[in-house]
Image (cartoon, rainbow, N blue to C red; front, top):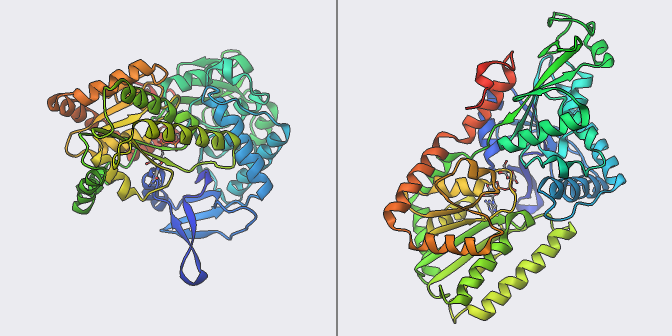
Length: 500
Ligand code: GDG
C-alpha cells in the first residue's frame, strides 16, 4: 500500500464535457507500478480536486483510493502547514516559515483521515509505504492502531539540522509520528543524521548508527497483546523488530537511513534515442538562432531552486562582456507551482523583473538573452531540451535530491553536455563528476559557467560517461527495491542494512 499526498493521476476533461483520469507519468509510478501489480497493491491519496468525493477506481491497472479534502483543508493543511511551514523550515528557512495553530490542527486532522483510509483496507501484516512531509504523523497513527503492519516512510525533501528543526512548535509530535515507522528513509546521509539527532534531543532515545531504539509504551504493548518485558517476538506479539533494550525495557528498533531516489533512466534513454525527439532538439537550437552555447534550467518555480542566483551569474557574465546574447542563451523553464502561497507569488515577481532587466539590458534584436518559459511541457519536449542544452544549470539552494540533474544525464546518450550542480542538492553526493558549485558564491558560479563553456569535448565526455554509469545503474527501480528490501527484512541489524 502506498500512501502519498497526491494520487498519481490527474483529472482531465475530455471531449464533450466528459472527464477522465490520466496517470501522471512520474518516476515514482514507474518504479512502483510493477510491484503494485504483483502484490495486488493500492495507492491512497488526494486526487487533486477540493470539495469532491470519489469512489475508489482503477487507472492503468493501479487501484486507487481517493482521500477527499475540503477547500479549507487544501488551504490549511496543504498550502499552509505543508508548503508554508514545513517546506521552508525543512529547506533551511530560505524563506521564513509561518507557524499557525489552525494549520497544525488541519494537518493532524488530514493525517488522521489518510491513516484511517489506509486502516480501512490494510490486510493483516500489510506493507504500508508512506511518502513525504505532508504525512509525517501517519506512521504512528498506523502503528498505534495496527502493530502488525509493516510501515515504511520516505522523506523526499531534506531533514534540517536540529537548530532549525527545533523552531517547530510541534517538533516532538512530528518525531513521534515518524518513529511509528519500521524504516524511515531519507535522501542523504546528512538528513538521516539530522533526524537521529532530533530524536536524541527531543526524546533521549538511543541511536546507534542507523538504528534507533524506541521504548514500547504500555498502551502499545497492551494493543500488541504482549507483556512489556517480553524478550522475544512471539505469536501473540506480532510487532516486528522488538527486543529488550539495554535498560531492560521492551523496545522496537527503527531503521533510519538514506535511500537516494532516482529516475526511470531507461525511459529517458529510450526517449533520447527517439528520432522525432532528436529532430526536435535540433529544431530547438535552430529556433534559438543556433547560438554557440545553450544553457538550460528546468525547475518548478520555487525559491529553493536558486533560479535568481543563476540569472544573476549569467547577467554579470553579459555585463562583464565575457559572453554575448548572440553567442550564449539561457533557456529557463519555470513550471508554475504553488501559486496561491505568497512566497511563490513574490518569487515569480522577482524572477520576472530580473528576466526583464537582463533582457532589456543585453538582448539583441532576434536574440533575447533569456528565454523564460512559465509553462509546463510534456516529457518529450523536456528531453528534447535536455538534448539541445550544452550546459545544464542546477543551482538549488537546498534540494532533497533534484531529479532534473539525473534526467539530463540519462538523456545524454551522446555522452556530451556539462552538468553544473549545486552541492546543496542531494544529487551532488552521487554525481561527483558534475561541476559542483556553491550557488551563493556568484563568482564561483560564473567561473563554473565559463569552465563549462570552455571544457574540451574529451573532458566533457569523460565526465558524462561516469555520471551516466551512476544514474543508469542506480535508477528508481533499484531505489524502490532497496527500500522494500530493507522494510521487509526481519532484522534491522542485518549487514545488508549497513551502508557502504
Ligand atoms: C521533490 C524534492 C526530489 C518540472 N517541470 C516540468 C517537469 N518537471 C519535472 C522534472 C522532474 C520533476 O518535475 C521535478 O523533480 P525535482 O527532483 O527536480 O524537484 P521537486 O519537484 O522539488 O521534487 C526533490 C524529488 O521530490 C523526488 O524525491 O528529488 O529534491 O524537492 O522530474 O522533469 N516535467 C514536465 N514538464 C515540466 O514543465 N513533463
